[in-house]
Image (cartoon, rainbow, N blue to C red; front, side):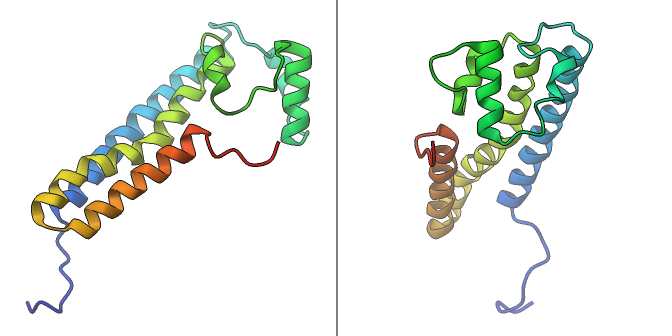
Length: 148
């Protein structure tokens, strides 16, 4: 094979990324089923009664948040960003944990491959992976809020 031909073999970093992504997806999916069951079967109390939630789904997000805050939470500010963490003991908000895991597993994947990229001498890819970690973490942090 010449240096100009593309290798069909996956690199160690690609395999590590895929392995972490697969396990993270499985953990998130299993937790999603568990937390949803805790909510649907009423094992954990909910902020919004299950019988009333479908009546709120047809509203735009801002109106939905206003209705939830007005009718159930009574907070000074609307529940946005990471404010769901305060409600982790409620069945309807417990479901956010696996969603956060599923969303964040990519960050872990990138972090895991960085040492191997540097070791192999792929500094450009390593720096891009670190930039991706930074950008995804910044986006997840909620520091770059847009709109209301």
